Length: 290
Image (spheres, rainbow, N blue to C red):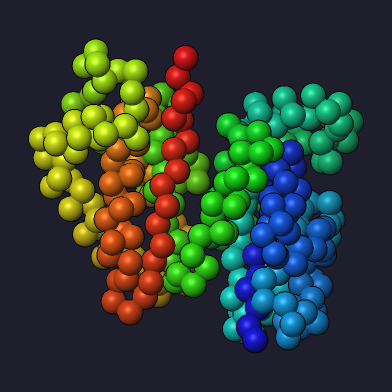
C-alpha cells in the first residue's frame, strides 16, 4: 500500500489550519506543526496502513524548517508520492486578519505586523518555488476556503492530473495560483448587450453569445491543443494539479462561459495518451461585482 503525502505550508494567517481541517474531513490523516526532519519517519510509521497523509509545516518549527529539503529528498528516494500545497494571501489581507484577532505575527517580535510578514515571505521563498499547488485565500472566508479544498481533493482521486479551470476578472488581479493564464477579452463583451448584462456566463443566452463569437471556437480548439501538448510534459514532471486561469474584464461573462466550455472539452477527452485527467471549473470573481 503506497501513501500519498501532501505537505501544507504557506503564510501565517492565510488559512493553513482551515485547509488542514478540511482535508481531515475528507479522510486525510492530518498532522499539524510536524518538524520536517520527522516527516520520513512519519511516513514509514503510517505508510503501511494510511494512504493519504497531510502534514502542516510552518515557520514556528524554527531550525527544523531548514531540514525540509532533506526530508523531501528522503521521500523522493523512497519513491513516496508527495505534493506541496502553499496557502497564500495578500499582505493587506494578512495584516487585516492579524489586526482583527489582535494577535501578533509569529515572526513580528518588537516590530510591526508587516515586518513579520516580510520576514516570513523571505523565509518561505525557496519552498514556494517548489510547490505543486498554490491557493490564494485573499478573497475567501473560512467556508469558501473549505469548499475550495473539497473541490480540489474531492475530485476524481484516480486521475493522473487534476485541472482547475479558473475564471477571473482582470480588474481584480491575476490569480497568484495560476499555472497558465489566458486572456479572452478579444471576444465581444456581453456586458454591452442590455438583455445580457444582468446575466452571467453560466446562463445559456450569455454562453451562446460568447461561444458564437468570432474566432471563439478556434481559440478553444487551439488552447486545448496547446494544453494537451504541455500536459505530456507535466506528466513527466510528476505534476498532479494544474490551474488554468481564463480572464476577462470583470470575471462575469466571457471568462465564465469559456471556462465552463473548456472544462467540458477536457473531461470529454478524459485521457491524454494513457494518462487520465479530471477537470473542474471554478469562478473566482463571479458575483463580486456590485
